[in-house]
Length: 449
Image 1: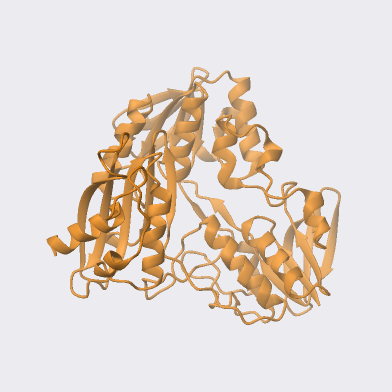
Image 2: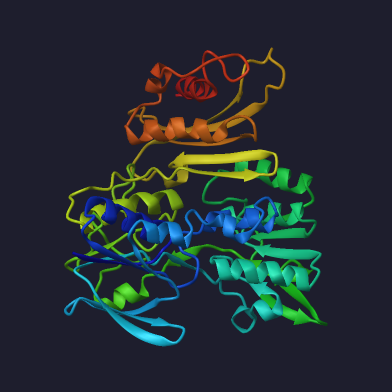
């Protein structure tokens, strides 16, 4: 069996490794468009901040370790065409073009950055100090440029996860950061306004300028400096970072006849099969099944890509595995605070009767020194009592990531808010309470209901 995988990030490497595990006699070839197979894109801000010592440290596996698994690794191989009838993939390398045959194909081409409709962006690039941040090459170019310019101020367009992480990274590096966001709050697809305001305050307390409800209209060069323009103001910058979201990198698949949805995401079933025979797809290029929604959604996350890739790889090797779906669990550190969310917010809960209640609970018993408050916004269906989602903000030491995982498990198993009270959670005074903060929030929701 010849299994060919296009892409070597989360979905691609997971597919290739699982295919080798399930069918050791198969030939598994993985095409990687750059020289960074299985590198952590999520870790880029922490390399740029200096917390991660060097670029090779971001590799989950070295090239030698990947090859040792039996995968035929082809770096600097960019797939340019797929011929499903002949079962071939054409790829270009720095000095040639090659054609590879396959019996089964997995597409894991990931996502591409979204460029907002801002005048001047199409004419400016890294040489001008205007950067995207989605690949290792883009990250290294930004790092080099900040040093070359001796940058003192960077304007970040976009206050999603990467924008917020980069604001922290630049600040820790001694570079001033200004964050511009067109929505009314930071992390607009994660937090309600009540908690977003707390994160804006956290950023500002560390010297980050935050301007929400600000739509950038132009980026231009003024007297040798970059200028970012909005209707209400303009900002001078040594460099500009555009991190306003991503879109599925599905053009190659679409030109092959693989079906994509209105967002451009590749359409797959629960076994990660496309509509083209013997072709699977996984990761940030595909839509995904959400346990709380009737229709597939597009939610690119590294955890999802790993799981989908594993399913695609197993099935390409002859299995019948199904992807269980997601509830959209996410977490991010913001200086001394941690933000986490899972499930649906009230504005996303179409088809339900959502009720959201905010509760404050200490992370451990108050009499034990160091207790800190956790803000929890819990969303449930007021008619059925079903848990729909949770948002949490707390201090770095308050185990926010693990507490959101409690809600995630409950969501994936269809628990009600009341059933959260039955969970047998751990307790000791330095680490928790007899009723954990997650359960106290459930009590608050039930009382309000």
